[in-house]
Image (cartoon, rainbow, N blue to C red; front, side, top):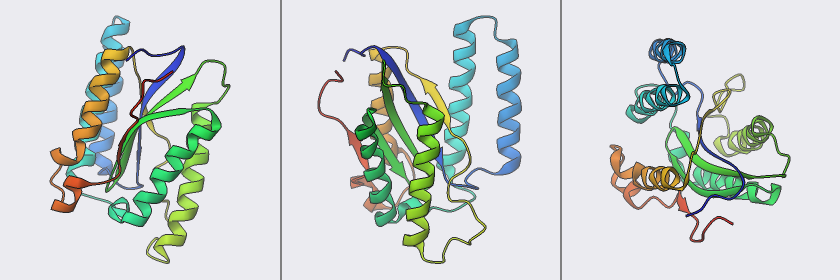
Length: 195
């Protein structure tokens, strides 16, 4: 699979409170130390990948926080909003929605002029508003639906994108999710080459 001009990002969004605060702080401290010790671009990238592995492991064990995305209506709504990003000029070649987080591959074609932070902010706002309506009082008014911000890892080449897609497609099976998640419909891979 060839990547077109532009940027391809592996993005993770998570529900508010989905990582234990102390563990999150420790992971962030390790990340900063590894980045400061990095003496090359490749070492910096390895530090980011190690941070992501720890970050995703914390999300996957689901020791704290809500699991709203296991509700099919919410997962369906988020999936629909992810696919709507294509109407803004982004490409969404692959994503997975699991109980407390979302992984998505986003391709920002060259010249589209979209800001990734603004795109994620708008996605957070739209989905949080709809989630509050669907949850009808299960989410306290003062509580956030999404954790502020996001984690991103730029894709380097087509081989890495293939590895990321494989990781996402097998994600529900790696987790200790109920049997219904093994055929979870909120795993998506576009069936055409990115152009």
